Amino acid sequence: MALTTLDPKTALVVIDLQKGIVALPTAQPMAEVVKNASALAAAFRQQSLPVVLVNVAGRAPGRTEQVLSLAGLPADWTDLAPELNRQPSDHTVTKKTWGAFTNTDLEAHLRKLGVTQLVIAGVATSVGVESTARYAYELGFNVTLAVDAMTDRNADAHTNSVTRIFPRLGETGTTQEIIALLDKRSA
Image (cartoon, rainbow, N blue to C red; front, side):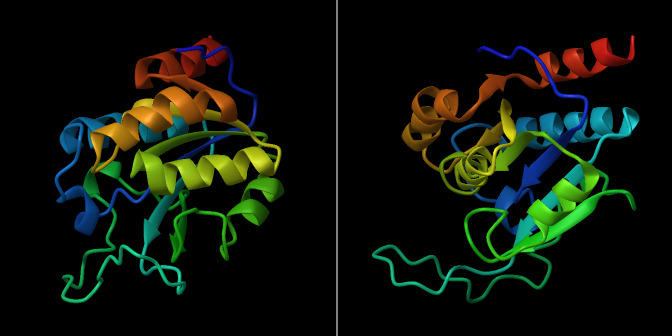
């Protein structure tokens, strides 16, 4: 873990912690991931820093060898996990691709606020989280990945993203390390 600092205008982006996904089996216990993401959201709100809650409501139209069927899902499958305690000040993004930037207003929203760094959490580590982190890095944002506030359906994919990909996109840290840096800023 190599977390060094948080920019003055850092935003939290929580990926796909929604009813239809948090119920799926995952490599790390989902209850811990949701608890840590919720703690991050509360800490960012306490510091009056932006919180972005992302859900997924579809998939990209291209052909793939592995198709995830969205048929037969309950009507509330896109509803955010209630533990995130969504607030009126939070910005919500509904995506239909892996990453939260593609065909959404996320970049414009962050630029309007003067955000220079993102802390990213959520699910799945190797899909939505990694895709969003890659795009954020390519757009010039500083990226921090809250490794204990994310999980994947595949343990090997999670480990690969955390150990091999994320150090090339930004810095990694735990929820407590990130909150400690937030608290240090206001001290």
